[in-house]
Amino acid sequence: MSEVAFLQLLSLGVVGVGIVILLFIRALFVRVVGFVVIVLAMFTLIGLGVPQMPSLPPAVEQFDLAKIKTPTAIAAIGQKIFFSKGQCSLCHSIGPRAGARCPDLKGIGAKLTREFLFESLTDPQAYISLDYRHEGLPKQYPARMPYIHRNPIALTKGEILTVIAFLQQMSGEPVSIKVQELMDASEAVEVASVSPSAS
Ligand code: HEC
Image (spheres, protein in one colour):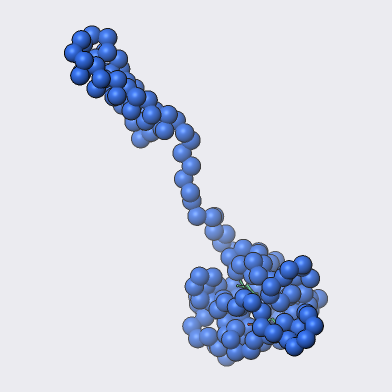
């Protein structure tokens, strides 16, 4: 018997006891206690009847590196991470978006080398790109690019490489990330400014 079913049975029993008290006992105080017990047990029953909805963390998708063979497949994983765990799409658009407060990443994979992209993600303060989308002097974006390899986003090096592959592909560039590099990538990026080729 499940825990909920057991508690429901128990509450039903308590309601029964309360009813027996009301039917057979004359003493006023005991009758009041019986009534209160019935009301409380009824509440418990209703509460237990509400469907239990455990709040589970979102399902984690595991990628089997052995099954990834093509650059397109790497970029496809990067695309998923861009829109989910990487949280990039919270700030960045791909293509102009009204009211966008962060750089539009359309074509970024063609503008920046993969080393520069890697640095943009893991050492975002090294070079701050400014907002030129308005009249007058360029100014800083109101938001800050987070360190993607640190909490709370904390992408692993392999995940960062797949995101770079996605940025390259959606910019019409050849994907320069190789499957072998994903396999070699250690779990986390230790130092902020390691370039992918140096480690
Ligand atoms: C909290 C908002 C925010 C999030 C989340 C975010 N970024 Fe950024 N990003 C920015 C801002 C602001 C800048 C511009 C300032 C700078 O260069 O540091 C920027 C700059 C960049 C640049 C350099 C753009 C250029 O023109 O030089 C790249 C590339 C980039 N982000 C990619 C990403 C990717 C990929 C992700 C997800 C893994 C991501 N960002 C997540 C806010 C964000």
